[in-house]
Image 1 (tube, protein in one colour):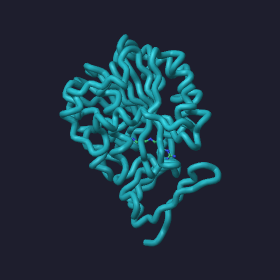
Image 2: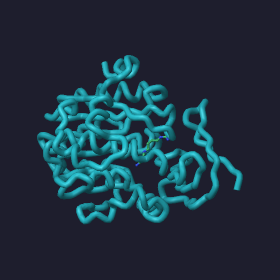
Image 3: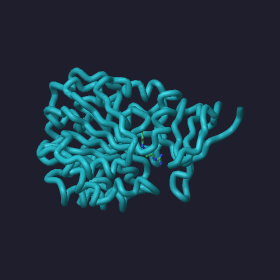
Image 4: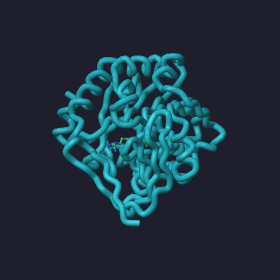
Length: 275
Ligand code: AG3
């Protein structure tokens, strides 16, 4: 087979990679779902022609969206993941022994099923007995649950279509109320090169709602520009003061105490987005 998959990363820029096999394609009630096997990234989950996660670089995103927040909170017993139907975020959450229950709220159940079948290395954590899976809209789930989670992780798609509500101030307000009084949350917030207005707005809104708002970085080559941001809002604990006891027991490939600290050291043009 000699075909290419192309993601139009912005309206003027594309990423193409050679596909060796189309493993799955379907139209779900929410989106076009595909799993391709590719030469540079291995198996890849694609929603509406946008790369969500790949076997080669998924560990960076999943470790960094999870361990920074879970190592910041001293006792994360209940953890909510919004989106993240591939299960990679849950796989990292269940590495934390002190987590008693973690709830995955994914709007599209077909994403979970496809990941179970085609991406077992990523979805494997979904079988952990502490995991509860709810197929529902994350926005309505946080509206219904108050004071219920120490940590909330927003593992969303890009801010287009159904996901736009996951990048709005009203949602962050509901997140604050769904968290315990010492809770914190983190969201993936796109590229500092191509989504500057979004990052600036989200950081301003999070800083208005939470005593602490912090932006951090990781490198994810299958995403636009490679350099990626995460925004963390916290009521009490500062991610710059990490809990080293938990860190020692984690089995990771990207995340470490040094990487945790370094991730908050922002190049000037990125730091400018938080002012
Ligand atoms: N969520 C998707 C991040 C955004 C990727 N954007 C892009 N390729 N244009 C990742 C889900 C992984 N659990």
